[in-house]
Amino acid sequence: MARWLSRPAVARAFSKHLGLRAQVVERVYRLVAERVPVTFDPSDQATLREVEGRNGLGARAIARAEWIKPALRRRPGQLTAHLMLTLTDVHQANLALRGLQIAGRRILVRRDLEEPKRCSKCQSYEGHFARDCTAVRDTCATCAGPHPTSQCTIRDPNLFHCVNCQVDGHAAWDHNCPTLRSRVRVRTMRRTDAGFRFFVTSSPETWIPEDEELARAPPPPTVWSQVKGVFERADAAGNAGSQRSISSFFSQPSIRPPSSQ
Image (cartoon, rainbow, N blue to C red; front, side, top):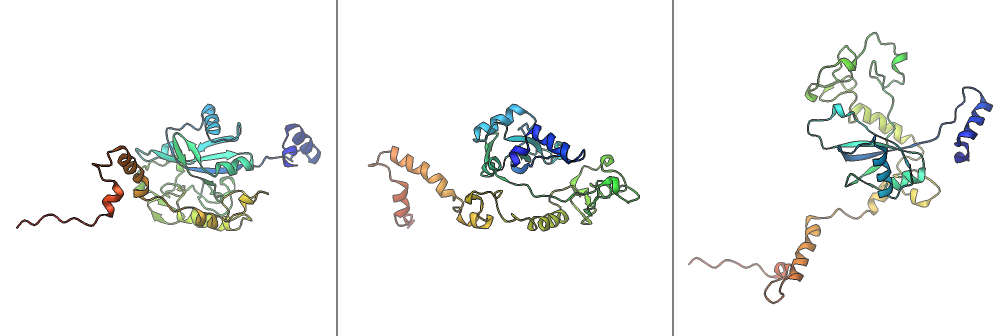
């Protein structure tokens, strides 16, 4: 039904029947790809098609991609950043949530946390926008000064001041702002599908709670488990009669150095 209604011809007729102000809006699924190399160009459509093909996604499954934080706000020498991906199909979104290969790296992908709207004039999360704000003057989201954020000249993060937390060290627009995080946590717990890693569909694979899926995951690899194969291959290529294996080396009792007497 939803796919049928999203067809342009059907949507126009449906909207016309309901009234001039009625509009059919297609649902989208927003994902966050963490720590993507900043050399990646999300505005390049050919690059997005390449990502889809490399990861088994359908053609044009990614409707839009954009950096979460503007490039101008990056730290000097920053190598990676978070990327917002917008998909229009729930099954494609769940496939992407299993992880993506982007710019030669395996990228962790998670569902976007719905953030409350922040007024760009007073910077509060009271549910209004700048056009309806009753504040007498602007409050800067970077330094909390009495001026528009666009006019702020402070670039040193140590001089940032959050007007919502009333502390130094971060700006009101920072996604790690404690005030923002607490409000996001409340909104997330109110969702009917809260606690699930995937978007819940008719597939049982999407019904597993996030905590249970993490418990099923294998433990992270140790350093030895990652380099053991290198030593074993070196042992196999060597002469068994003149070269001891790494396993036999560790199985032997400790050998003390000869006495100096």
